[in-house]
Length: 74
Image (cartoon, rainbow, N blue to C red; front, side, top):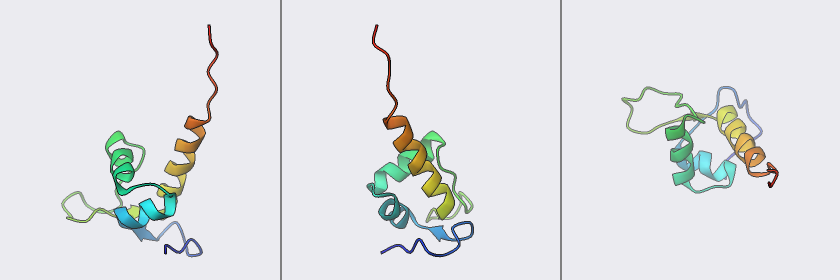
């Protein structure tokens, strides 16, 4: 279980931890990163990507807000 009580500014999560915290599959975290919604906190040369917890929370919130948008029909 991922802890959300700590300092979200400095806490780094792996893809699996970020997915668990956001309530999505790990592939979704990879998609967010590929689309630019989520930036890696460590060097791209590192084999295991790490993401800042606050960035994951913000990406998840933005995704949920985009999903709730109402579009007018013509």
